Length: 443
Image (cartoon, rainbow, N blue to C red; front, side):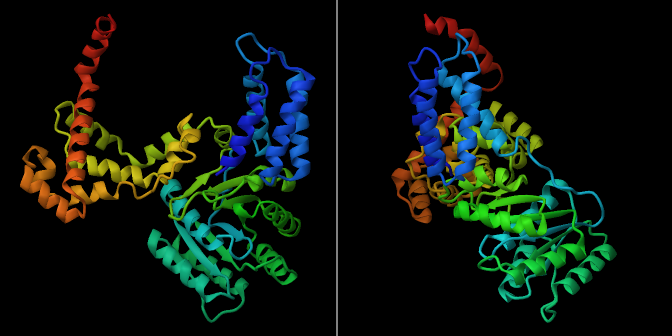
């Protein structure tokens, strides 16, 4: 995501490195490269030109502090303007009323049905809402089946009428059932087409007039670049949607849609889809995205994901075990599984400042932990609790049971023991003692 754009912007800023001050000439050279980088990322031409003109005006009108280099100042200005370009602040959903109705719109293939499931899961798990999904795509039986599968997966009710071909009747009946059951949020999945057409627009417009939804969201595939922006414009002119959701932002996308769409349709990006799993939906934060584009990482989002997965009480218990040197392979396996729930491993590492660029050319398989899990799961409960029991014959059995070899088993156990010693060292009194000893160690 945005890797090519990040690289090209980084090269553009290097033109200012070593410069003592900002001048019209060196700013023009830098911004020529910035504009080219934006256009290569499939950003709308007018948006790219307006953006670089604004950056130029602000750069030439700002004094460079002694402690800040021209390149650093330019990065700061570009970060501020990228944030503004993408909307400035995160935009909330309007959840006032009962039931709240959220109408999903978009072309076929944009990921609208999957996104409906992800949004239902988000509102249920993070907002405590009671959610109903409504299947109003009357043209594709597979879409109805898919919605039922997703609903079962996340524990959300799905309303459908397979024989009914009028989406307004289906939606009306679903709303009545939601009121009767005390369900406070209804997400309506609608039909998509392979291209914008009048029949499609008429149907979604009639549904909106009938439902009067609190939120109408336009779902668009981020990988389609400027086509996404043009489609968004056509939909907005007809149904005046409230916000945009970008799907497949974890794919090989150049980023043009994310950077252009806010300016062109003047509607906020509210969510981004970042993977296949039902929890792979993030609230869109323009400033955090700008930081990531510029290679600054996104520690806030990383911490938020960690907080969602790690229970405070469990963490306190784990700390006690570490302090007593009782951290075992069951605990280690549990921690690995929680990390995996946080999302794509390479994406997570990219949120750490400076790491994204370092690993951009490294292929990090999201199944990297599988052989570790296989080794630990091939142990008995007692062996996981007491790794010191693992003699040669036991290790040979574990290697055979996990489909690995004894060298891999030995390597894992060595790394685990080293990690356990390190964790013990940084806990409680040992950490304080280490800090006291540091001046002597330096001598």
